[in-house]
Image (cartoon, rainbow, N blue to C red):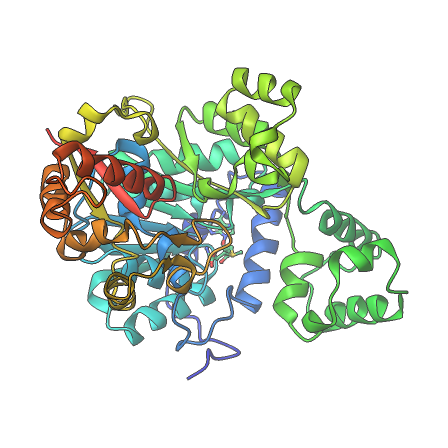
Length: 468
Ligand SMILES: C[S@@+](CC[C@H](N)C(=O)[O-])C[C@H]1O[C@@H](n2cnc3c(N)ncnc32)[C@H](O)[C@@H]1O
């Protein structure tokens, strides 16, 4: 079944003044602000986003990005059980993200809100279609009016592809903070000004041509298509933004060339917004893909001046340097939370052997699936390297885990284990040192495990925690 072209709007019977207050059409709002929200709502009522068919299943990467266990581990270095947790999806659109959140986090309930009644209608249909109807609720409500949900509070707030539409994202973040539980986490993102520079140029052009005076539709899309088809391929704006494969995808035009309210931000601006909202910035969601060393031809031969600069740079400065050099992320996608929440811990890469003695480790639940289990067993029995990309097709991450040590992961397939349990298992399967033929010592079993787990933890494949 595909999504209907003209969805029925389920809010038809709602009292108009009540709807107005939920949508941010409150007469107290300045008329410019009312206009802005009305334009955005009209755009998404006409074309709810994303235009994914009901059958479209979230990809493993989508699920990984929406997995609360990863987010909580980044923030608290603790393993959590998602059972009973409450998730809010702000600007849920047609509900593809809400569905991903429900699938990636068993036992949670999802509340979705959006400015666009047509989008809300589709989001509810999508969740009903997958049998999540009784564990989800959708409401027409604007980000600006989230406090109407109080006293309800949420353990996790997802706000994907919306914040950059706000005149001041700090105000939007502060609105989310009002309904965030004490140790809750917000995942949100801003368009990256550097990466999207050419699209902002295109939007300026189409403003100038009057295509964005009203609510862009088929006619405006056609004008843009004709223009790009008429341009030489070497014309900069065409070279930088156009591909013939996109020519028939209306959503591509709407979300890039003709997007009302779209704005870009830099890393320092992202950090500034978080600070002004009195929130604690935690981490980029795809932190694995923000490594400056990965931009170098030979990371072991870093120019001395850069190495010296990086040794003194803050985490935010390193992200900004990465962005200035590579500008490869469309989104500045990040987690943040209340500043008072305690998150003092030593990063796993800095753990000494004694930290491992008191550690427990789990595989990331998004990786520990049937395909991975079969692949790991096959690698172990065949003495082969484990090809991680077969299970996790993302642009970053380890390509392979050596067949010599991958066996250390086997006990984790059926749940979290203490480091001591992993060492015991290693000693059982490798009882004798292959060079001296003496019995394997605890340290001989621990060293390769520490290496394996530290490397995998960098990518979020395994999640180590200190036991209380
Ligand atoms: C680009 S779509 C993103 C949809 C969804 N989060 C996703 O990433 O798949 C932006 C959504 O935010 C909604 N939106 C925009 N401004 C809003 C506001 N101030 N309050 C609530 N929803 C808003 C739009 O109606 C639209 O559905």
